[in-house]
Length: 195
Image (spheres, rainbow, N blue to C red):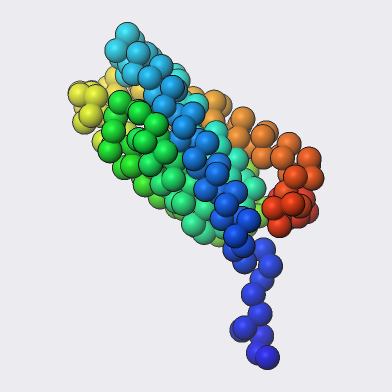
């Protein structure tokens, strides 16, 4: 048997790991529907800045990315989230799938920058949040009729700070709790792999 045929355990995908990512994506998408309704109300009442201040959209995706820092996790989780969000009645409809795809690409870029190093999982999740807002706001600005002006750029910066504080930090905290709880052993993911 040659060395090239040996698969690194950290890199191997199992059905349990895929199921974990899909379930976290589905939870993220289902919870995003009421969050989106509140976000639309804030956007209508306070404009770009009001909407930018409310960004708890990717808590469970941040959790998935922290638990399993490997290629494909963010994309799979976010695409599942986008479809679940659309199917649970989000008023944005098919645009949710775009947001899922764009958010997944943001996470994949973050992972590539840090070479999917498990010791840099926290930085990967934070960079995912930072990249998520610009990549998803391309269509958000069009859908909600935001004018390209200074207020939009200020809203972009406010949104980046808000998503890191409201999504990435809680996602990392939940992931750390889950990793220390021992529940991951039943899913085929050891606690040492997630710490």
